[in-house]
Image (cartoon, rainbow, N blue to C red; front, side, top):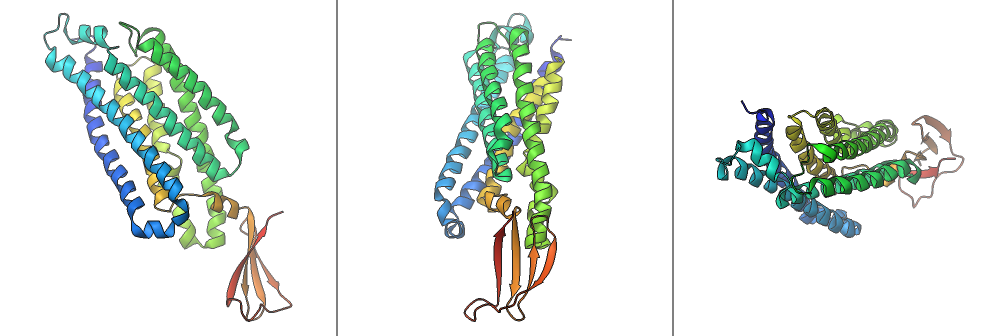
Amino acid sequence: MSSMSVFQNSYYIGNNFNGILYGVELVLYFMTVRAMLDPKHKQSRASSRRSDGFFLFFSTALLCLNTIFVATEAVFGEEMWIVNADYPGGQDAYLGDFASVWYQTLGTAASIVLNLLSDGLLIYRCWVVWDDLRVVAFPILLYLGAFSVGLAQLYESSRPHASYFAGLSQKLGVAYTSSVISLNIIVSALICGRIYFAGRRYAKIVGIEVGRDYMTASAIIIESASLYTLFGIAYLISFSINSQTSIFFLSLYVMMTCIAPQMIILRVVAGRAWTRDKSAMTATNLEFTKSGDGSATRVDSFGESRFTKHSELTSKHSNPSMIEVVEAV
Protein backbone atom coordinates (compact mmCIF):
# COMPACT_ATOMS: atom_id res chain seq x y z
CA MET A 1 0.00 0.00 0.00
CA SER A 2 1.24 3.49 -0.80
CA SER A 3 2.83 5.40 2.09
CA MET A 4 0.59 8.34 1.18
CA SER A 5 -2.58 6.33 0.75
CA VAL A 6 -4.33 8.06 3.66
CA PHE A 7 -3.42 11.45 2.20
CA GLN A 8 -4.66 10.44 -1.27
CA ASN A 9 -7.97 9.20 0.13
CA SER A 10 -8.37 12.28 2.31
CA TYR A 11 -7.68 14.50 -0.68
CA TYR A 12 -10.28 12.68 -2.74
CA ILE A 13 -12.94 12.87 -0.03
CA GLY A 14 -12.08 16.52 0.56
CA ASN A 15 -12.63 17.31 -3.12
CA ASN A 16 -16.06 15.70 -2.94
CA PHE A 17 -16.97 17.80 0.07
CA ASN A 18 -15.66 20.86 -1.78
CA GLY A 19 -18.24 20.22 -4.50
CA ILE A 20 -21.09 19.79 -2.00
CA LEU A 21 -20.21 22.85 0.06
CA TYR A 22 -19.60 24.92 -3.06
CA GLY A 23 -23.24 24.27 -3.95
CA VAL A 24 -24.21 25.55 -0.48
CA GLU A 25 -22.15 28.68 -1.07
CA LEU A 26 -23.84 29.30 -4.44
CA VAL A 27 -27.29 29.03 -2.81
CA LEU A 28 -26.30 31.48 -0.05
CA TYR A 29 -24.80 33.90 -2.56
CA PHE A 30 -27.89 34.01 -4.78
CA MET A 31 -30.15 34.27 -1.71
CA THR A 32 -28.14 37.34 -0.70
CA VAL A 33 -28.41 38.90 -4.17
CA ARG A 34 -32.13 38.16 -4.27
CA ALA A 35 -32.62 39.79 -0.87
CA MET A 36 -30.74 42.89 -2.03
CA LEU A 37 -32.89 43.19 -5.16
CA ASP A 38 -36.17 42.70 -3.29
CA PRO A 39 -38.29 45.91 -3.64
CA LYS A 40 -39.33 45.68 0.02
CA HIS A 41 -35.68 45.55 1.02
CA LYS A 42 -34.88 48.63 -1.07
CA GLN A 43 -37.69 50.59 0.58
CA SER A 44 -36.85 49.54 4.12
CA ARG A 45 -33.10 50.09 3.68
CA ALA A 46 -33.02 53.09 1.38
CA SER A 47 -30.21 54.60 3.43
CA SER A 48 -28.11 51.42 3.16
CA ARG A 49 -27.54 51.28 -0.59
CA ARG A 50 -23.84 51.94 -0.16
CA SER A 51 -23.45 49.10 2.35
CA ASP A 52 -25.47 46.80 0.07
CA GLY A 53 -23.10 47.61 -2.78
CA PHE A 54 -20.12 46.82 -0.57
CA PHE A 55 -21.63 43.52 0.61
CA LEU A 56 -22.43 42.55 -2.99
CA PHE A 57 -18.83 43.23 -4.01
CA PHE A 58 -17.52 41.42 -0.93
CA SER A 59 -19.76 38.39 -1.51
CA THR A 60 -18.70 38.20 -5.16
CA ALA A 61 -15.04 38.36 -4.16
CA LEU A 62 -15.58 35.51 -1.67
CA LEU A 63 -17.31 33.42 -4.33
CA CYS A 64 -14.58 34.04 -6.93
CA LEU A 65 -11.77 33.15 -4.53
CA ASN A 66 -13.63 30.05 -3.38
CA THR A 67 -14.18 29.05 -7.02
CA ILE A 68 -10.44 29.32 -7.68
CA PHE A 69 -9.67 27.09 -4.69
CA VAL A 70 -12.25 24.44 -5.59
CA ALA A 71 -11.22 24.43 -9.27
CA THR A 72 -7.48 24.15 -8.62
CA GLU A 73 -7.98 21.30 -6.14
CA ALA A 74 -10.19 19.45 -8.62
CA VAL A 75 -7.76 19.97 -11.52
CA PHE A 76 -4.78 18.76 -9.48
CA GLY A 77 -6.69 15.63 -8.48
CA GLU A 78 -7.62 14.96 -12.10
CA GLU A 79 -4.01 15.42 -13.23
CA MET A 80 -2.67 13.16 -10.50
CA TRP A 81 -5.23 10.33 -10.65
CA ILE A 82 -6.36 10.28 -14.29
CA VAL A 83 -4.20 12.21 -16.73
CA ASN A 84 -0.91 11.03 -15.19
CA ALA A 85 -2.08 7.74 -13.72
CA ASP A 86 1.00 6.00 -15.16
CA TYR A 87 3.49 8.63 -13.91
CA PRO A 88 6.89 7.05 -13.01
CA GLY A 89 6.88 6.38 -9.30
CA GLY A 90 3.11 6.52 -9.05
CA GLN A 91 0.80 9.13 -7.56
CA ASP A 92 3.06 9.80 -4.60
CA ALA A 93 5.92 10.75 -6.93
CA TYR A 94 3.61 13.02 -8.94
CA LEU A 95 2.45 14.71 -5.73
CA GLY A 96 6.04 15.33 -4.65
CA ASP A 97 7.11 16.70 -8.05
CA PHE A 98 4.10 18.92 -8.80
CA ALA A 99 2.75 20.01 -5.41
CA SER A 100 4.04 23.53 -6.15
CA VAL A 101 2.71 23.72 -9.73
CA TRP A 102 1.52 27.24 -10.61
CA TYR A 103 -2.20 26.61 -10.29
CA GLN A 104 -1.73 24.99 -6.88
CA THR A 105 0.11 28.13 -5.80
CA LEU A 106 -2.83 30.14 -7.18
CA GLY A 107 -5.23 28.04 -5.11
CA THR A 108 -3.11 28.55 -1.98
CA ALA A 109 -3.00 32.30 -2.60
CA ALA A 110 -6.79 32.35 -3.06
CA SER A 111 -7.31 30.53 0.25
CA ILE A 112 -5.03 32.97 2.10
CA VAL A 113 -6.80 36.02 0.64
CA LEU A 114 -10.11 34.36 1.49
CA ASN A 115 -8.88 33.99 5.07
CA LEU A 116 -7.90 37.65 5.24
CA LEU A 117 -11.26 38.84 3.90
CA SER A 118 -13.22 36.61 6.24
CA ASP A 119 -11.16 37.60 9.28
CA GLY A 120 -11.52 41.26 8.32
CA LEU A 121 -15.30 40.90 8.22
CA LEU A 122 -15.27 39.05 11.54
CA ILE A 123 -13.27 41.86 13.18
CA TYR A 124 -15.67 44.41 11.70
CA ARG A 125 -18.67 42.51 13.08
CA CYS A 126 -16.95 42.36 16.48
CA TRP A 127 -16.63 46.14 16.39
CA VAL A 128 -20.29 46.48 15.38
CA VAL A 129 -21.42 44.23 18.24
CA TRP A 130 -19.25 45.96 20.87
CA ASP A 131 -19.26 49.48 19.36
CA ASP A 132 -15.82 50.03 20.89
CA LEU A 133 -12.53 50.22 18.96
CA ARG A 134 -10.52 49.28 22.05
CA VAL A 135 -12.05 45.80 22.00
CA VAL A 136 -10.76 45.05 18.48
CA ALA A 137 -7.30 46.63 18.90
CA PHE A 138 -5.55 43.36 19.74
CA PRO A 139 -7.39 41.31 17.07
CA ILE A 140 -6.27 43.88 14.48
CA LEU A 141 -2.62 43.46 15.53
CA LEU A 142 -2.98 39.69 15.39
CA TYR A 143 -4.59 40.04 11.97
CA LEU A 144 -1.61 42.02 10.62
CA GLY A 145 0.82 39.46 12.05
CA ALA A 146 -1.08 36.57 10.45
CA PHE A 147 -1.03 38.40 7.12
CA SER A 148 2.79 38.66 7.24
CA VAL A 149 3.27 34.98 8.10
CA GLY A 150 0.77 34.01 5.39
CA LEU A 151 2.81 35.81 2.75
CA ALA A 152 5.97 34.04 3.94
CA GLN A 153 4.26 30.66 3.74
CA LEU A 154 2.91 31.40 0.27
CA TYR A 155 6.40 32.27 -0.97
CA GLU A 156 8.00 29.19 0.58
CA SER A 157 5.34 26.75 -0.67
CA SER A 158 5.58 28.12 -4.23
CA ARG A 159 9.28 27.30 -4.61
CA PRO A 160 10.16 24.45 -7.01
CA HIS A 161 9.61 20.97 -5.50
CA ALA A 162 8.36 22.55 -2.28
CA SER A 163 5.31 21.17 -0.49
CA TYR A 164 2.64 22.90 1.54
CA PHE A 165 2.69 19.95 3.96
CA ALA A 166 6.45 19.50 4.49
CA GLY A 167 9.62 21.37 5.42
CA LEU A 168 9.77 25.08 6.23
CA SER A 169 6.48 25.66 4.48
CA GLN A 170 4.77 23.29 6.91
CA LYS A 171 6.29 25.09 9.91
CA LEU A 172 5.23 28.47 8.55
CA GLY A 173 1.82 26.98 7.88
CA VAL A 174 1.48 25.93 11.53
CA ALA A 175 2.49 29.45 12.64
CA TYR A 176 0.08 31.09 10.18
CA THR A 177 -2.82 28.79 10.99
CA SER A 178 -2.20 29.18 14.73
CA SER A 179 -2.34 32.97 14.39
CA VAL A 180 -5.52 32.85 12.31
CA ILE A 181 -7.28 30.33 14.57
CA SER A 182 -6.26 32.29 17.68
CA LEU A 183 -7.77 35.36 16.07
CA ASN A 184 -10.95 33.41 15.24
CA ILE A 185 -11.28 32.07 18.78
CA ILE A 186 -10.77 35.48 20.40
CA VAL A 187 -13.16 37.34 18.10
CA SER A 188 -15.79 34.59 18.14
CA ALA A 189 -15.70 34.50 21.95
CA LEU A 190 -16.05 38.29 22.11
CA ILE A 191 -19.01 38.24 19.74
CA CYS A 192 -20.72 35.27 21.46
CA GLY A 193 -20.35 36.80 24.91
CA ARG A 194 -21.51 40.23 23.82
CA ILE A 195 -24.56 38.96 21.92
CA TYR A 196 -25.63 36.68 24.76
CA PHE A 197 -25.43 39.21 27.59
CA ALA A 198 -26.39 42.31 25.60
CA GLY A 199 -29.10 40.32 23.84
CA ARG A 200 -30.71 39.54 27.18
CA ARG A 201 -30.81 43.25 28.01
CA TYR A 202 -32.17 44.07 24.57
CA ALA A 203 -34.90 41.44 24.96
CA LYS A 204 -35.96 42.99 28.28
CA ILE A 205 -36.07 46.42 26.66
CA VAL A 206 -38.03 45.65 23.48
CA GLY A 207 -39.71 42.41 24.53
CA ILE A 208 -38.72 38.78 24.38
CA GLU A 209 -40.62 38.18 21.13
CA VAL A 210 -38.50 40.78 19.32
CA GLY A 211 -35.26 40.13 21.19
CA ARG A 212 -35.24 36.37 20.75
CA ASP A 213 -34.12 36.74 17.10
CA TYR A 214 -30.76 37.97 18.42
CA MET A 215 -30.31 35.39 21.20
CA THR A 216 -31.02 32.04 19.54
CA ALA A 217 -28.27 29.45 19.17
CA SER A 218 -28.35 29.78 15.39
CA ALA A 219 -28.02 33.57 15.60
CA ILE A 220 -24.99 33.32 17.90
CA ILE A 221 -23.37 30.61 15.75
CA ILE A 222 -23.84 32.63 12.56
CA GLU A 223 -22.86 36.02 13.99
CA SER A 224 -19.68 34.65 15.58
CA ALA A 225 -18.74 32.44 12.59
CA SER A 226 -18.35 29.54 15.04
CA LEU A 227 -18.33 26.88 12.30
CA TYR A 228 -15.38 28.65 10.69
CA THR A 229 -13.53 28.60 14.02
CA LEU A 230 -14.36 24.98 14.90
CA PHE A 231 -13.24 23.57 11.55
CA GLY A 232 -10.14 25.73 11.79
CA ILE A 233 -9.25 24.14 15.13
CA ALA A 234 -9.72 20.67 13.65
CA TYR A 235 -7.44 21.55 10.74
CA LEU A 236 -4.80 23.12 13.00
CA ILE A 237 -4.60 20.02 15.21
CA SER A 238 -4.26 17.61 12.28
CA PHE A 239 -1.81 19.89 10.46
CA SER A 240 0.43 20.51 13.49
CA ILE A 241 0.83 16.76 14.17
CA ASN A 242 1.57 16.23 10.47
CA SER A 243 -1.43 13.93 9.99
CA GLN A 244 -2.23 12.85 6.43
CA THR A 245 -5.89 13.65 7.08
CA SER A 246 -5.04 17.37 7.36
CA ILE A 247 -5.82 17.88 3.66
CA PHE A 248 -9.43 16.83 4.33
CA PHE A 249 -9.84 19.27 7.22
CA LEU A 250 -8.15 21.95 5.12
CA SER A 251 -10.86 21.53 2.48
CA LEU A 252 -13.63 21.91 5.07
CA TYR A 253 -11.87 24.85 6.70
CA VAL A 254 -11.42 26.78 3.45
CA MET A 255 -15.03 26.17 2.46
CA MET A 256 -16.22 27.45 5.85
CA THR A 257 -13.97 30.45 5.35
CA CYS A 258 -16.34 31.38 2.53
CA ILE A 259 -19.67 30.04 3.83
CA ALA A 260 -19.50 31.53 7.36
CA PRO A 261 -19.07 35.18 6.26
CA GLN A 262 -21.66 34.69 3.53
CA MET A 263 -24.17 33.60 6.18
CA ILE A 264 -23.36 36.75 8.17
CA ILE A 265 -23.87 38.95 5.10
CA LEU A 266 -27.19 37.27 4.33
CA ARG A 267 -28.32 37.91 7.88
CA VAL A 268 -27.25 41.57 7.65
CA VAL A 269 -29.04 42.09 4.34
CA ALA A 270 -32.18 40.43 5.73
CA GLY A 271 -32.14 42.93 8.60
CA ARG A 272 -31.74 40.29 11.30
CA ALA A 273 -28.10 40.88 12.25
CA TRP A 274 -26.88 42.73 15.31
CA THR A 275 -26.24 46.42 14.57
CA ARG A 276 -24.49 49.33 16.26
CA ASP A 277 -27.91 50.81 17.05
CA LYS A 278 -28.78 47.74 19.08
CA SER A 279 -25.41 47.89 20.83
CA ALA A 280 -26.09 51.52 21.70
CA MET A 281 -29.60 50.69 22.89
CA THR A 282 -28.29 48.22 25.45
CA ALA A 283 -26.30 51.12 26.96
CA THR A 284 -29.31 53.45 27.28
CA ASN A 285 -32.36 53.80 29.46
CA LEU A 286 -35.73 53.44 27.78
CA GLU A 287 -38.81 55.09 29.26
CA PHE A 288 -42.26 53.88 28.22
CA THR A 289 -44.85 56.55 29.09
CA LYS A 290 -48.62 56.24 29.18
CA SER A 291 -50.27 59.64 28.75
CA GLY A 292 -53.47 58.57 30.43
CA ASP A 293 -52.26 58.89 34.01
CA GLY A 294 -48.73 60.06 33.54
CA SER A 295 -47.26 56.81 34.77
CA ALA A 296 -44.01 55.57 33.26
CA THR A 297 -41.92 52.44 33.31
CA ARG A 298 -38.18 52.93 32.89
CA VAL A 299 -35.89 50.12 31.76
CA ASP A 300 -32.24 50.85 32.50
CA SER A 301 -29.16 49.48 30.79
CA PHE A 302 -29.26 46.36 32.96
CA GLY A 303 -32.83 45.56 32.02
CA GLU A 304 -34.27 46.58 35.41
CA SER A 305 -37.72 48.18 35.42
CA ARG A 306 -38.69 51.14 37.62
CA PHE A 307 -42.22 52.55 37.99
CA THR A 308 -42.44 56.37 38.19
CA LYS A 309 -45.18 59.04 38.18
CA HIS A 310 -45.15 62.18 36.02
CA SER A 311 -46.69 65.39 37.40
CA GLU A 312 -47.81 66.55 34.01
CA LEU A 313 -49.55 64.77 31.19
CA THR A 314 -48.02 64.68 27.77
CA SER A 315 -49.23 67.06 25.10
CA LYS A 316 -52.56 66.25 23.55
CA HIS A 317 -50.82 66.32 20.20
CA SER A 318 -48.46 63.53 21.20
CA ASN A 319 -49.08 59.85 20.62
CA PRO A 320 -51.11 57.91 23.22
CA SER A 321 -47.85 56.26 24.21
CA MET A 322 -44.29 57.22 23.57
CA ILE A 323 -40.78 55.97 24.10
CA GLU A 324 -38.14 58.25 25.53
CA VAL A 325 -34.50 57.29 25.21
CA VAL A 326 -32.29 58.61 27.98
CA GLU A 327 -28.53 58.12 27.72
CA ALA A 328 -27.07 56.04 30.51
CA VAL A 329 -24.69 57.71 32.91
